[in-house]
Length: 219
Image 1 (cartoon, rainbow, N blue to C red):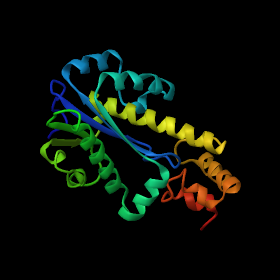
Image 2 (cartoon, helix red, strand yellow):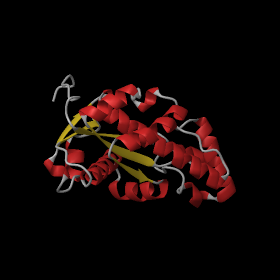
Image 3 (spheres, rainbow, N blue to C red):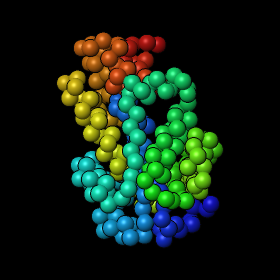
Image 4 (cartoon, helix red, strand yellow):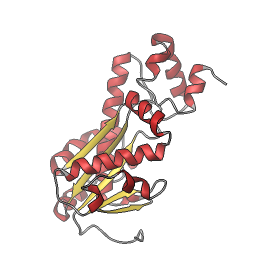
């Protein structure tokens, strides 16, 4: 379907993820059901792509979106993420699995025949991961899908959950776990290993990142 197609007058589910590029913390996928009525409220709330909103504002907006729209959030913690990555060995397949789970969970709550997601990898990845209910839905995948309010709302819920879980992990370790995958992140990783050992790293970080080699001092 061409990117210009306007779907804002339709009931639809938007799906988006957070944490994909962050070394520490979970991978979170959210699905949000939006109707033309709830879309008007989301517009008044100035809902937009979470990458264009501060963390503080995201955490303020998320509870309102959760109240307004039926939704599903799938959070894959670092330990589970690492187990799945060893099995699946491909980030796009892992993402597709998470998208499919979030969509299937939401379809237990609502009747909807249209879903919109960001384009990543092969378009068939999400379709192949869907189960019975999901296979009956029309799935539109496109670049910059966050321009659609349903996907933007999902991006906010996913990021809010990521931020809350990253904060909890930081509190458990009594160490600030930064976002992203920067030299500051590497330093925090070394601190985790120094204080708690190599095994603990796998409970807070996505080990397939190149950052792991730097943290462990491996060539």
